[in-house]
Image (cartoon, one colour):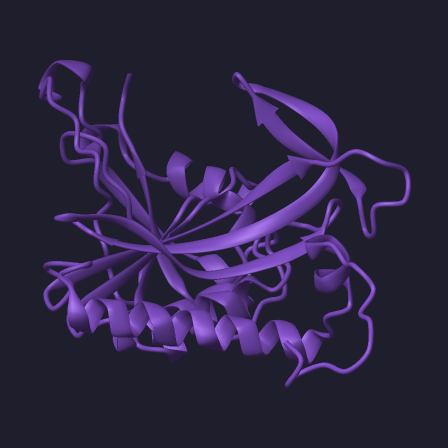
Length: 246
């Protein structure tokens, strides 16, 4: 310590140290974390099967904080035991990489204000997570999975630009309702024709939006990024709406 510092140094906490970081320091830490994960994957079988198929899950979480002087602490929605509640805290956006044979590992994170929308910064985070997955040996198909909070044309466009596929939950909008209503009744699967075992993995498509939960469904096409519910439309993304009788 005498070689590095001269004089008496004031005691500091980890919190005050982290608060002194600039945005550039945060980016440097993120890069160090990505390189560390890539080196771990080269030294140990952290993501077996990534050369065939890898998943990237993107989701946000709201963490409660205490104290009136917490920086960027804001009220945001979170779910507790299935109930949506308003919590004062910080919002984190997390991307985790996994395979059918491996548990997920964090590939990219971003800490935001508590009132930040879930899709804020998701396009940049998705691009970084895909690059990290490639560095970790994911040379096969990559499927990015998101919920309806990230149903935005900018996010989907970023995923496609980086050579990955996507699976996203679409909110129920008027365009999607119209597409579902347009499915003929003869093309819908009846409840009796559905198998007892349900599929738990989405059907991935490179340029289309598809989903399946059980038996084959009737389907109808619509343009996802031109619909009112798809925010900040850039280009046109084709999709298919699926429905079944219940």
